[in-house]
Length: 265
Image (cartoon, rainbow, N blue to C red; front, side):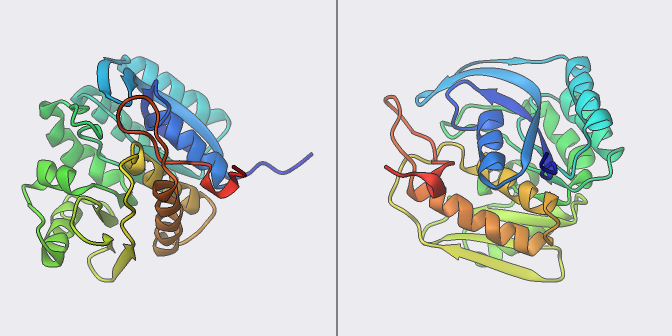
């Protein structure tokens, strides 16, 4: 009998197209050698063209899933994704504050296609309740603007964005510059040390699930005991390869390739 691998829990919405959300999280975790578990917060009907519908689960269903997993199996890291309402944000924040494990918060606001995945009235709960639980918060530039009002146009803007996010209480902020021209540049900082992560920008439009994948990869590294900067560095390397290998599905934006390291065709 083999020893159990590190265990990572994703608390997020389901993506019926398989490219983002819970599905992307579990694929990432498998690819990186940890055992993925899930708390589903919402069910979406979505494909390569966008989100056609979303149905939030009741807070008691989210709480029951979480307690079922954490109380019996235990976790070494947790990643949060789509939490569509203030009620869900506050429920999850309460659960996280009572769990002794590193937390990666991906403050999902909109889908890759521009569909809203977080109610406007939930923003304050994200700022005041969810971000303080985070070991690492991983907003993209649109989410930074939504949460803080900071508009990033250069590297100094990324520093200001990180400072604004850190003011809400996460230990580290990973500001994702994927929407910024030039190289794919991210900034990881705890307010004292800075780590700039650069990667070539691949000419590939099939990038659905990038944010979910990166956050899950960071959580996987933390579950293995890596320090935050190394967990983020390895996650950046993994997601860069996944973006380069992203493939077409349907008539719109295809997913990144979570299994790019293992493909034989």
